[in-house]
Length: 208
View 1: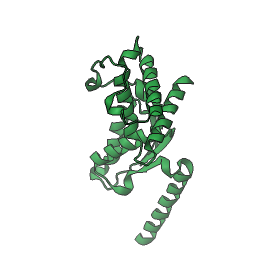
View 2 (view 1 turned 90 degrees about the vertical axis):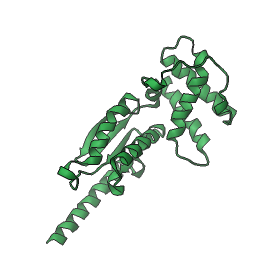
View 3 (view 1 turned 135 degrees about the vertical axis):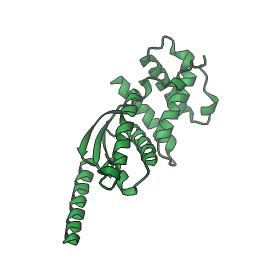
View 4 (view 1 turned 30 degrees about the vertical axis):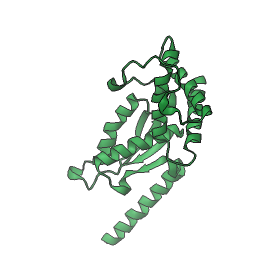
């Protein structure tokens, strides 16, 4: 009897997984339940994954945490960790909102990249940028076309933030923008090409 129930439960789980993959596609699903990470690992993985999906322009994604039936007091540790993380990512311009998909998963609506650049600066990021309009030395290895697009986006971001004379802050804003985008783009031979695509999408979003 127990074996039959387990088989039924497994078949039901496979059915729900197939339905989720049909609705979202495998690239827009993060299944934390399968790898069983610690709470800290799950939070770091989910944070990085959501930022990557934002840059790759995924509107809605699914994070599966599991219900936590095997956890102490039947309180889902992964579920709780993700719920604690989401309000922080909303303040940082990564997510817009979320909803429960089922007791063990969340549908998360990602913010446009323009929200990422105009989110309130954290205190440690709040120093005044150096007055400089030159190409930052740390970005000198980038191709000229990439630097030109990055500079354009940096100026656009500063204007959206209400900076009266954005030209004097362009250098620092280029570095900040590059850091946020590059960290969210998967390592690949065409990473700079993907970076340019992400910059162009961010520019287009603000122009709409």
